[in-house]
Length: 276
Image (spheres, rainbow, N blue to C red):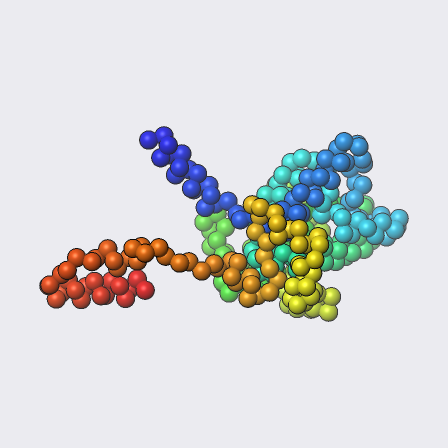
């Protein structure tokens, strides 16, 4: 009895847990490694944060590295959880290579706008972490989805409103979140979703070439993580693998008993049509 209950719980958790993809796994590992380095070396908490200092001190490299920087362990863990649950669909839609490029593109554009606005503020406030890019990916997803409504904790909401609801929840729960930066990230995600950043976007053919060379070729060999190809045809094969049923598993074969009654025969034919 205990074994059956354990199996049910395990299957339930497996259904709820998101599928780990290669791109999100690389982002998670990079964030964890950098957090370990900064903790071990006792680096300043704002060593890679963005703000007015990006332009005042010329720290342009922070525009690309701030998503991997987290000040505290709770901030890191909550950001990783949000990344795994909210950004997996973006990587499945674009492919691993294009997702990593998109990750850096959304992060850098959001960082530029926030740093510029932070210069104009009387009190400068630095920010960092994965949350801005996560919200930008959610905003991008809502523009490309065919669903007009989404569900959050059992509550039906318009798909367009989901990024703003998640903005309030994540900004309140994740430490050191800056509301202005998160708002800018959602707007940047919408701009990308509209196709207005296509001149600086990576094409599918270019990504298909890059994924065949190192270091992206190494991501394919990582077991336990799904590498999503850039080509739409190969991506469809990866996400929707063909299922070959074993002999005897065809549902109608369960009714192999000879039935002479005409009504029951027509009923089984109707069931077969409804199932298929």
